[in-house]
Image (cartoon, rainbow, N blue to C red; front, side, top):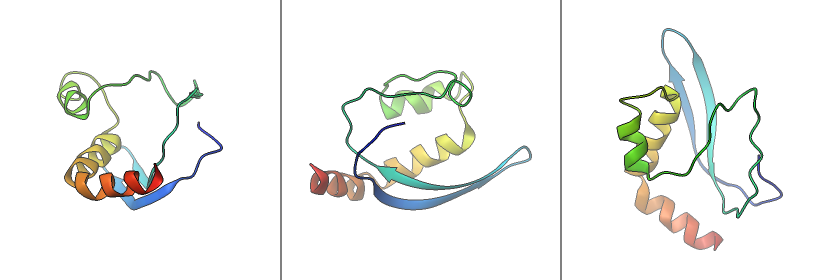
Length: 88
């Protein structure tokens, strides 16, 4: 997790497949770290380019709802950049 930091709501997200159903709310924030990962929930964390994450998701397991969120974020890149500029 991160905190304390201002979160900016972007959109609500719903994902469903044969194995899971996920309701979520997607936020942006600016945080310099440290990041505290919950071992029960996060197997691995790393910083990579969004395009690399999409490529990697075809070769190794990623959460499908996370990939859907990334695709939506990239489709809304200009809108999200405007939100980030308001924060910084």
